[in-house]
Length: 108
Image 1 (tube, one colour):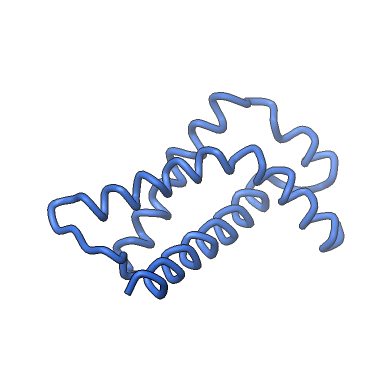
Image 2 (tube, rainbow, N blue to C red):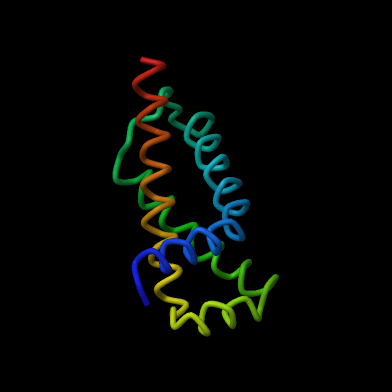
C-alpha cells in the first residue's frame, strides 16, 4: 500500500463517516456553549478533546450497524479497518481543533 492510495482510501472512507462526526461535533459545541458552565468562545481544553475522542465509540458503533460490510473494498486494497479508523480519528480531531481555534480567534 502506498501513501497516496491510503490517503485516497481514507478520504473515501471519511466521506461515509463525516455526517456522524459533524453531528457529534455540533452537539459538543452546543453542550459546551449552553451547558452548566457556558463559555463562549470555546477554549480548546483537554476535556473538550477527550469528549470529542469519546464520541468516536458511538460513531464506530453507528457505522458498524448501518454499514456492516463496508470494509471489503478497503481490505482488497490491503488496508485494515484499524488503519481507516486511526486516520479518521486523527483527521477529524485536527479539523475539530482547528475549528475551535478559529472560532476562539475570531470571536474573542
